[in-house]
Image (cartoon, rainbow, N blue to C red; front, side, top):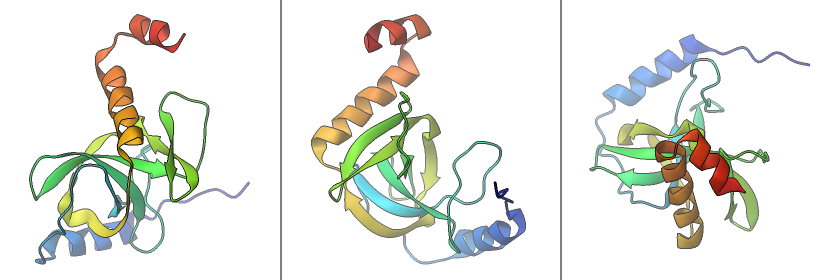
Length: 143
């Protein structure tokens, strides 16, 4: 098995470029899915890929033009409450609700798609359960 080595130095160079970029961030809204430079992260936090360290991210909540609450996505499917399956461009992918976080809109690269409202509402319910139900309530709501 090939070991994945994280290149923090290359990401740091890219991150500085993103931070100091003066261009206006694109217009985005809730339910949008964008390629976002999420970078090289610590431990089991989801990493971006390729030269821009990007990953698809679903916009959960837009706070203003400068930042939003988002959730990374993956083509990996797992039978796990934190990997919520949704349909995207005729394909089933996962929304990684355990990786919910705030993103600067400066990290946004290109728009990928928009999640349909039914799947978006499913994600919102999953996030609410994850954040606000006690472990005992979560167990009951699964069965």
